[in-house]
Length: 189
Image 1 (spheres, helix red, strand yellow):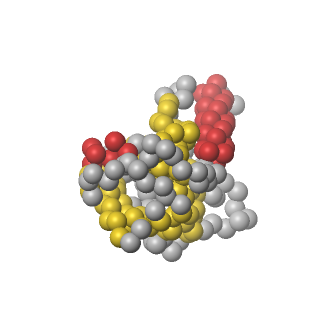
Image 2 (tube, rainbow, N blue to C red):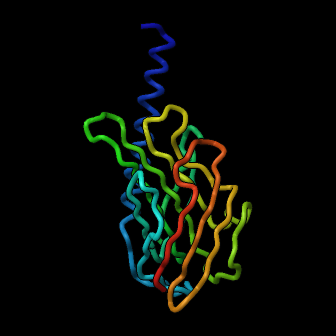
Image 3 (cartoon, helix red, strand yellow):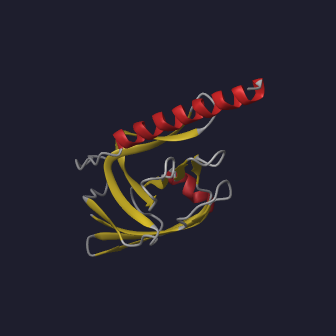
């Protein structure tokens, strides 16, 4: 075994450990909390995904009284952390259907963002998405193409009707391939 392949193996093991730890931290914070916030103008109670690609399963969660904070690890990779706060955080998860007998075949995409407190706009586009801390996560055994990335290109539309907020997100990632580029959902207020 050459020194180069030994270093490459070590880097892959380190990267895999960071990815596993980040995923565990995120999952711990994604446990739904339904208590209301004094500072929030909206108290959302539940969410429903109304669109999911046929190649997998989807889950949409509403996390109230939370903030989404984007951090960087010691190698400069972005990762989200959900903390107690005064916003509502939306977490969309797509899990691709894979053969359970295949090792390292799991594939997950995540979209996580904070809802605006006042819905002063019905459409958020491109650079406006940064105000919502919107991130795309691609978690798989995909060398060099896994991790979290800010969503910079797309549009998020809101419409309030009869105690529910409907949203539609269309986005494009330039950094990594993606399966999900369109998300629709409704949130009960």
